[in-house]
Amino acid sequence: MERKTRHSDRLGRLRTLVSRRAVIAATFLGVALVPGGMIAALAQPPVAPPAELAAKGSIAYCATIDNPPRAFHDTQQRPTGFEVELGTEIAKRMGLRVNWVQLKFVGLVPALQARQCDALMQELFIRPERLEIIDMIPFSRTGQRIVTTKGSTLRASSLDDLSGRKMAVPNGTTIHNLAIEANARLKAAGRPEINLVVLPTTTDTFQQLAAGQIEVLGTTTTAASYYIGLRPNDFRPEGDPFGLILTGIGLQKGNTALHDAMKRSFDTIVADGTYKALIEKWNMQGSEL
Image 1 (cartoon, helix red, strand yellow):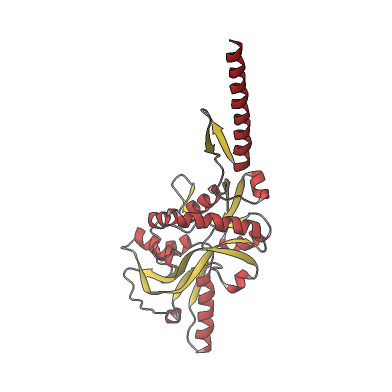
Image 2 (cartoon, rainbow, N blue to C red; image 1 turned 135 degrees about the vertical axis):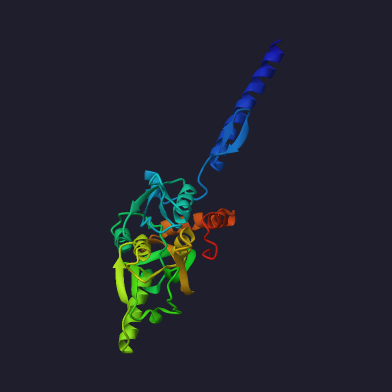
């Protein structure tokens, strides 16, 4: 009886020792013990965020949220769209929640520089002059397109062909700047300039086109596809897309910790097929990297 008791005690001490070593090993390896002595991986984000964001548990994105299908509000006024879902997934893989800060387009970069948000999750073109003031992570492509009404007799293969026409553009966008450049060329050639109507948002330009207040508008290929798809009997594209360019997430200059974490998170989204699924869900084929 005494021998069995000593044997039982030795087995108990051995089990305790093994259990303690397993706990130490599990802690070192980042795993956890579950009932029955099995080891399971802890639920940790695949990409570690910068310490500042990890501490507050969230990331703030500045965006216009008025550029469907990339970003817009649903019928319950919740942000949705390709960029909203992509930005949310990037944050999720860093173990972070998302706070959206809605601004007009012209206020995005100044807000980022003033640290009103951590990143710009927006269809933001990657241009040399922009890279001088912010860092960027490419996540899609886009271009420019001329849109007119279905019954219009307008024929144009370039912005210069819109000489004398009344055209709407969203304020501060690339198509706005390209139209200004076209006007400079037209003026130098002694031709009538484009009658530019500068409006706050892309939605405003399509509303004015539908109301007959303008003859034509300039927008991105993404927005053109979306709005023409909604009203194919009212709108049509004119000419071919032009100015194809990479778009990217905007970050404060020199914030390498956040840049690297978001880039790694985005890469995992591409690698596991989530990126492709989002492209297809939001009819963004042709805009993928």
